[in-house]
Image (cartoon, rainbow, N blue to C red):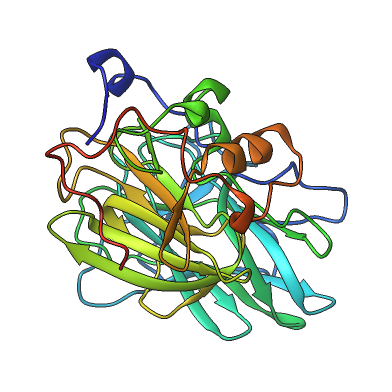
Length: 317
């Protein structure tokens, strides 16, 4: 289901996050910030990696029995959407599926992060609605079945009221602009060639319906606040649960090669009702920083190679 070349698969991706850089109003909490970080006795302290934020960072071995989360505490002056970012050093010996827990206004949300890559920079977990008050906002859990240390270093919170209403479905540094203009095989959609484990983001706020079938594999139907359906396929894993409400730019899964797929990539489609729409103009506008056209105005032809072949069509869901 993809036109991937071996060279594309081998590209090393940089996780830069979908949102703009944080403004001066950001709140940064380091693991050494007095009174704003707590961790159990099994969490160690290290200054080994030069990618650390501040003087040191905390680490712990995985625990498949209990979460034993290390928590970053922050004072949120006003309730509302916030961009939540994390900083950690990366290493091949660290954990590839570290659970970060965000205490949102309507419950905790878990986002899985590969701490073997993209270290020494701010990494977006997504945009979440936070309640006002002084409380534990972001936790790093030990509850993972993957090997390697989980790491807690620093977090950054940025109010995003009035901010971007749209996000690319992948980290901006993952692909050049030209990939968002490519045609699909034989119906309105697009295949985005990225390696397994690349974060996939909600292109706009909405509600999630989980897909798990032989064609799409692990995927998501995101019903946007505009009523359109934004479909993601071939995840290696989900980052949100069925029925969850998500904010723009929030991580909803990790890309992969599940379902009817010949190589790791993200299949992305848009539909209004039962009508499939070409997503290319929508994605190009977001990449260029302009307001994308309404889903209902997107074309239904001109974005694929030919009429139906023997290849199955991803179901509408």
